[in-house]
Image (cartoon, rainbow, N blue to C red; front, side):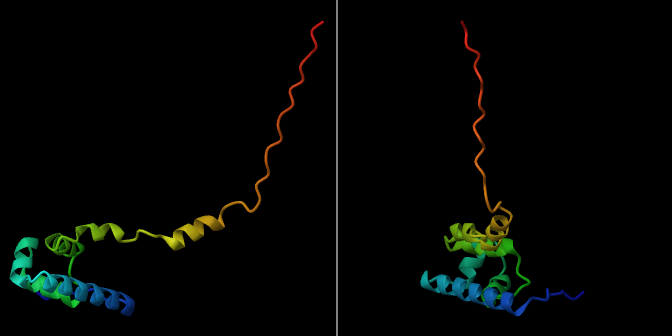
Length: 112
């Protein structure tokens, strides 16, 4: 049985390639071997190698485990943090002009 690989847009391939390079650089800065990181992440060495190559077949959980093994797991919270397009779309639907409500006038009867 052959494995199928997802078809990715070139921009996504570039992003995954950059991520892989960053993971490899972080591993090398810490002077960790692929075996050490793979064991700490609970993944196989080939999976780590594929992640460092930026292959699209690596699961997001494998990337998360690698980040954890490198003590970079907080970087996951930066994914999709700033939704510029969503905020812009939401702002387009805001009313252009807001009129203040007129204060209601309550007539008070004079007591005599």
